[in-house]
Amino acid sequence: MPATASARRWIKRCTALVAITALLFAQHALAQVSLPPVNLGNTNFVDGRALPGIMFQQTIIAAEADRFRDNDGSTAMAPDQLTAFSVATQLAWLSQHQIFGANWGAEFIAPLARVDLDINPVMGEARTGFGDLFLSPLVLQWPARELFGRPYWQRLNLNVTVPIGHYDRDRLVNIGNNAYRFNPHYAFTWIASDVWEVSGRVHYLWNGKNSDPPTRLGAGSIQAGNAIHTNLAFSREISPGLRVGLAGYHLRQITDDRIDGMRIPGSREQVIGYGPGVRRQNGPQVWFLHVYRESAVRNRPDRHQVIFRWARFF
Image 1 (cartoon, rainbow, N blue to C red):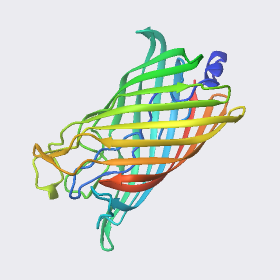
Image 2 (cartoon, rainbow, N blue to C red; image 1 turned 90 degrees about the vertical axis):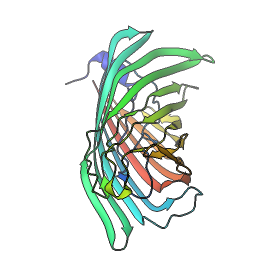
Image 3 (cartoon, rainbow, N blue to C red; image 1 turned 60 degrees about the vertical axis):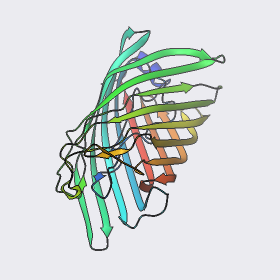
């Protein structure tokens, strides 16, 4: 439907209403329990700023890892390579009504992914399917306040992931995680000057138990540890509607994975990602393009990824 005049004014001042978490790659059944896909760099410039309305967004992620790091940061013997391509569809809504001084709303995100995992030259598996459903039954977006005399926007999002994605305990690669999780976040944007802005998110990740784990693990249940992950971005407006800048992310697992209720020492994951990005806005449409490289990787794939987002506001 065509945007109203008030919606157009809103578009000029905001980007994403709420989080977008696209499926980066599958939970793979190797010698460890893996953290599920989370928002690592998916959201960035002008992230915390929004006003009431509806947003439809598509996020495309292409990721590849040709090295896997162990607990010491050394290259693991296997697997050899992981490639993934995902598309996430998001619908978000923010109302005119307020709770605790904030406009409230909701969102959902449905990911579709293709994953190819090569264990060695003669063993591997590929799979395409829908991932788990990301739901936010409560989003609170506060109107702009002042921080050091400049506008400051902030948002709280209570995100729950429902395990409806493709999962088969006998498969080497799974798109779904087969466990509930709770992943709330706090997002902000500070308009530091007429051209500069700083945005970020702080997430907490709690993972539920998978009571039907991969057969090859020979276990009755598995549970990934809890984690904290953050996004941080700086951008400068170089012409009306066009921003360029740098963005990054950090993930740190803070509790051990569990197999049959027993803690697994040395299982905590960690990663830092960083790279350039650009944001272009034209009326009610916004495009983002970001490229990331990772470092300080522990117990997970060492990736590089390209993220493209297109959002349409109503």
